[in-house]
Image (cartoon, rainbow, N blue to C red; front, side, top):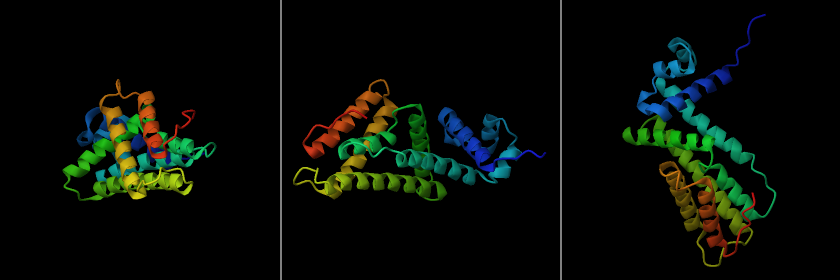
Length: 206
């Protein structure tokens, strides 16, 4: 009986091999040849799925985005609105090995996109992921506002911008100084930020 090949799984395996190369050696080292060697495949087999490097890089970046989106979509809606908001934020912060790897890949792709002078497919993908995070911040701040939980006098649009900036900053701190910016510390700081918007204490229980 002929062997059934799961092409979607194969493509993801190649993308994961690219992630490992990028994290270890940098994005400039992620050629078809090096990714094939990392995956234990021939270069020809990799080119069968990804005829050019741009297609491989685009798929690898898109896979990061899709996996984050899947986690965010699976967040439990049980509990108070502020507690649910914090759960969503947990999923986009580098708080464990999987999320740290995703953030390191994101940083590498972002740096390469900037090096390409803001043009091309890679820059468009980085831009899209950035906008998706902004959309999440908008959703969360609007949820607090619609439930009349924000302190009086706060500007919703400004708080969306601020939450996005806090997310980016905490993620960078966790990547640059993980011994200091531990998952516990990052969660505390994010909870304190949300509490500053509400004027009340939020239950830290997940």
